[in-house]
Length: 284
Image: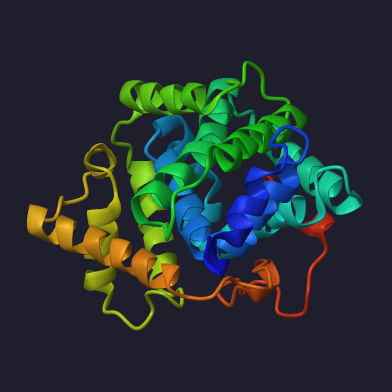
């Protein structure tokens, strides 16, 4: 076993039921920080293709008129839970803030359950496709346990107990609910414009970034947004580039310092700091 895989083996020896937070934290901040960030961004992107979700987000105007702030608030709230733990004062405050926002907009439980499933399934599938290694069963089970615990704190009912259950929920919900909605499309467009300012993409021309994102999106997701589907060769090339990145990362030494929200230069809303209890958006 090489030093590159030492953390993977250490995680395998952990209990995914009782040490879920520690495992998910290591996966997200040490083993796959870039991949998890990309996957969760695309996970949120998926939700806009459900008209009840995308339409609501468009009506609030938070993701179309204040895209940077809405994005940053979401990242910082989730980071507070992950970095400090759900039972910590910061974690409890973040979950409470999130619950207040959701209750203010009357979001149906079915939509909440679907959004939760995207946070479980999308990173696993992304890392399987593009990561420098695959996730172990222990890491997948820990993710299920972590988001199940978070979902319960959010008051979500009928949460699947396995990854297969979450994957079935996500795939079935998308088959039944993905559809074009002008509001959802406007939110997706605004998010894509914000993505073009991120360090990974900001030196590329906007049309190239759009082409790349369209190539990475699932075909049924592109169809729901009425985005043009790039030619098969372009799709293959873009995805091959992501796989190549994973192979390059595999050759790098293991990360020693975790990547947290404070390290993300694309979070620009609070240059002078913030309080978790002030994060979020509410009806005005």
